[in-house]
Image (cartoon, rainbow, N blue to C red):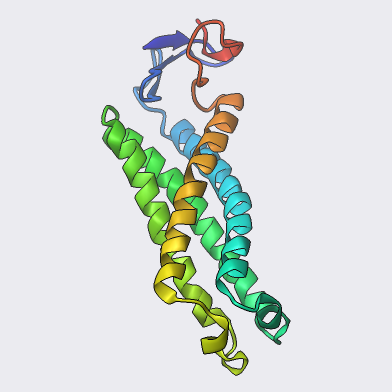
Length: 197
């Protein structure tokens, strides 16, 4: 544990699990914890949007044989963009929630910290890869446009698993810069004086 003082009451912070507690106050300040959780979820959601929107565009253009025909059809572009935005939002917030729950419920089991976010991301990516078929209008001729459904689903899962470390690392670094978690380098010479006593 490490003692830290802010402008308000001092805090105790655990570098291993990220636990925070007020010194001389209640063990948990619910308002502070909920507001911190919401801000961290917002950080994960933004990074999930950025990373998965790029990945879903790649997924679409790889697994649709003639993407220009599919995109130029009336009514095909807007639903795909809306579904990609929806899956990006779900992916970012689900990864943030799985990182939070894994660290909270199993603070010392490192395998859970890897497996839980990756499995959540794989499920969301597989569902997105499978949904490409539902977004192309029937008039286009799905059989001639789409490649194999199993490969499309597996590539969506694999792409989401590749995007997960990027989302976690970038969100973690931004959270450390904003003071919501200890810096990744936990030495006193880390340069972030907010976490030094």
